[in-house]
Length: 100
Image (cartoon, rainbow, N blue to C red; front, side, top):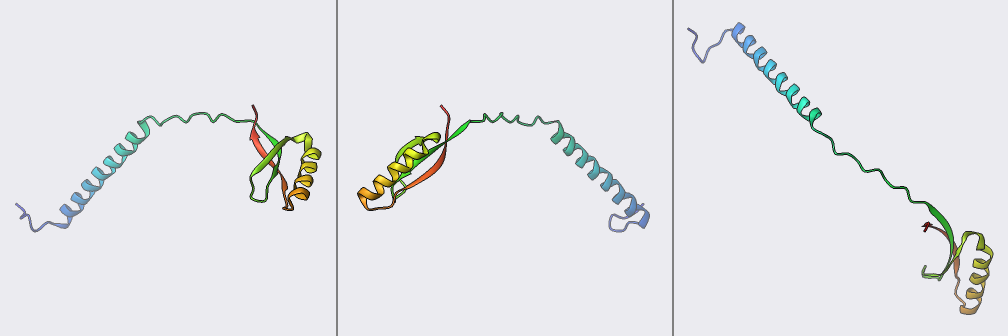
């Protein structure tokens, strides 16, 4: 009979091998549990079609008026009129907005 405090080398190796075998079993079981759990399905992202509009903006960036893409000349004309009448520089910028 072997005392609890003293183990032979053969017993230590056998005990370590058994502990390693049990640890591997637990790892495999955890991986299987993760793999078998259903993953949440992702919703399909609805693509929103965008269009470009020209916005005439004040010096603070506030939109004064928006024009459709082909009406760039009208946007430039309004920009020049506002800049001349107010004395402050207005700007024209292209912005993407969702299509109706």
